Image (tube, rainbow, N blue to C red; front, side, top):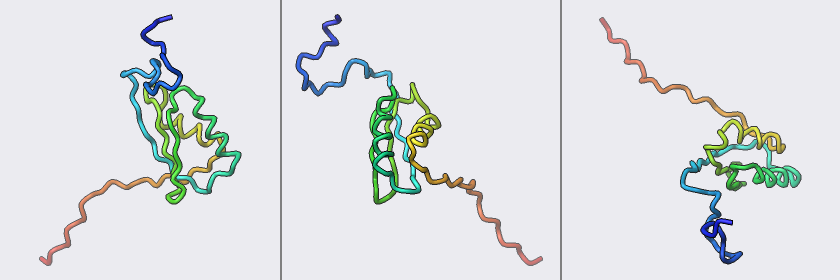
Length: 109
């Protein structure tokens, strides 16, 4: 056993040695269509068992789910898939059109 990675006390607040500085933490904000049921909430809680999922937090007023994950292990598509597989119905994403400058009015010739 490597003594440097051993926690001296079970309530030690330092992060475990498996989370090192090479991890890239990313947050994704997903909007859901319908509020999650109890069974969906439990299924989402189990997604924290997936290596790389760090934190989930709901904003019920805004109907959003914020997920913090390790981008060296997962990507946004994989995280969204996990959420859908848990049973949460996500709202469709609205594609933002490229902003182009408004055309100038025609001048009288």
